[in-house]
Length: 214
Image (cartoon, rainbow, N blue to C red):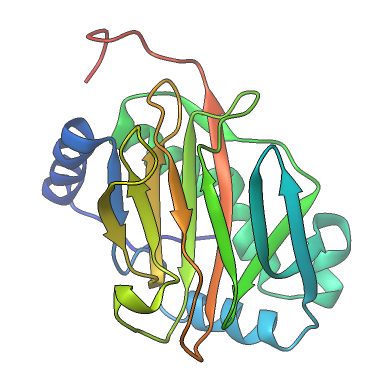
């Protein structure tokens, strides 16, 4: 099963250089043709549930749909490809880009996060047990300016200065380091009547010492 679009040695080398410079990279047109569309259509055909959380001063407000791996094959056909992407293809590609042996954080299913007008995610670092790399699989067809919110913002250590803004994508994969590099980030409140759909998760593995490998 193939879930990722093929990339040449030159493209991989460019991704490695980008990662080495910033510990963050976006893969555009990352998925095989039609996979992003099939995932988005299938997800939006199922109900989402209101998700609100307030943990350790971090607030979040959006919609979430959770699909269990063991019930997915009969209920949600594209989930088989998504599971292969998360557990096999994505860790292999991320390992090739970062120079670390990575694997998916073990979970029993997958969650689709849907932001609509009024949704947001407060500043946080994503740090947690075994998490080294965060990923965002973009399934958002709408596009809008950053001033309307809903973009992923990376912040300085003061947690107020915005260093970079990443717009939602469609068929994209964003990778960024969350340990040992502390990278506060947030999704500011979405003020436009659009939707932001993504699958988010983490990769774990053995941490490589500085200078040990590229």
